[in-house]
Length: 333
Ligand code: CP
Image 1 (cartoon, helix red, strand yellow):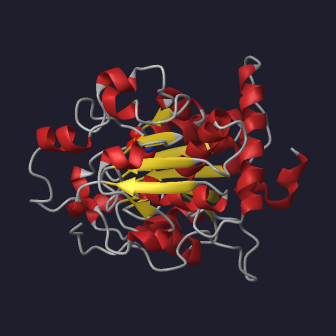
Image 2 (tube, rainbow, N blue to C red; image 1 turned 180 degrees about the vertical axis):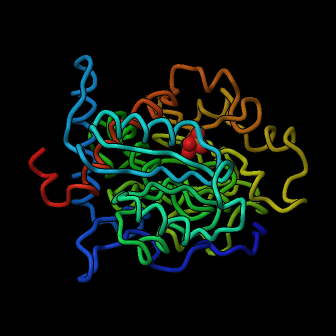
């Protein structure tokens, strides 16, 4: 298969999980690459406890009372921004949210100076989404605050990765070993795919990717996955499928003939998902382009866990926020 020349790892190697340095006791979550299995399971167990609390009726805690959180979203978001804000409110944190519009970034202020301003206001935890790969790791080095990556360019989206793991843990009865997922579509530009591959392979699942050659990074196998030549080959006998959105905002022109052609060759339709195991599930990180990467009858069909993924957003973000903000004290929650 002819491949695009983009690197499989658009951010610097090791730009994933950021272990607190000796100079700082702060915890950061900048990626799932390199996060130990025990930490992943700890965060997933925490998210499950938060989900049970939230399911029990109105619930709010003061675990993060007095802690100021800033949600800095320099790219559009519905799911991630709302679920971080709701998680912060559930945990009793003070929180503010801003984006590129309506701030002094538009007057030429650098990202670093903006974040220094944020830190000077007493914020100790920053949730950041930015178009540039490596932004979260950069801020973790430069700012004395915990940094949570809410999606940086084509690098990682670790809290999306965790809610995908949580959804699969439910579907797979707590066992990742011996399970296989097919991730279909625009792998080159997908931070969701990178976080999913990192987390799933650490927990013992097998990942097969497939998609147009122009949207498949060179040396993608270095991420720990196999590559299938067709969507049918990837889906045959799989335990789950994840369709990816075409990331047109990150694409150069000419990478795709047309949306219709993409849907015909790579779209998840009923005949294709029937190739998976009978209990296999269908996922999509959202936002979906119905009729392009996923057909409506699949998105709304019996196998779909797409809105289970979004429902896991608040519990996962509660777990990550408390893990980052409270350090070792979080274990007592
Ligand atoms: N999956 C995801 O990151 O969605 P949003 O862009 O709506 O946050």
